[in-house]
Image (cartoon, rainbow, N blue to C red; front, side, top):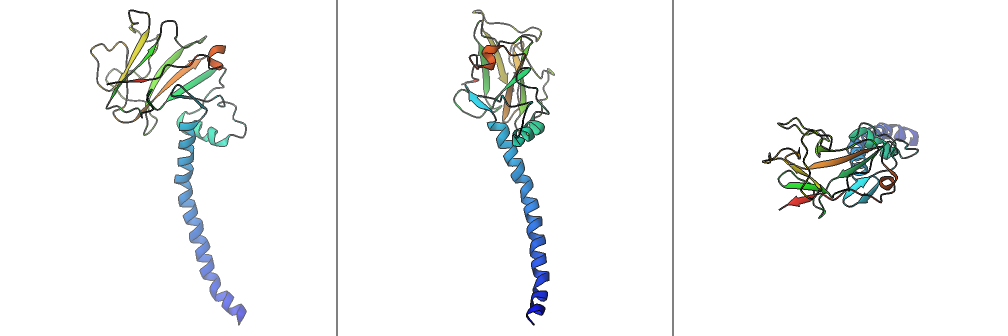
Length: 205
């Protein structure tokens, strides 16, 4: 009789196992996505309100970092070839958002120290895609035609949704939350050792 009772209870246990497995599978997807997104935002070290990782391109057992790069960056080179800095906030720690205007200024003689080239790119924080804009401009640097330095030799870029009076140094951004990536190719030792760090992004009040 005991065996018969166990047989009657078996289908119930089976259903519970199946439902539990399905529930675990359903919950695992958003949880995994959340972990990967967290890793993308918090990867590497923070310097002057920028995030930079020296672990890309040679991940070893850092599987979460590998997943974050695959999902949000579509692959990265090793740091000796390309070092990427990511900004999610301004110099006050406030989330970058297109309802405000921003600027970033490189002091005279303080452009990113590289042996190849560098650039600034804006992305929408919601999908990590480039930002459509009337100029068709998706990155900006000293290689961009028409970029103008300030009278004192410094270089300022305008990061905003609204078209400024002078578009020479304008990098269009998303209307909602956005991120900025500074790409540096063939970084010099002072950059690799973080003796040079990017200037923080300032919100124009």
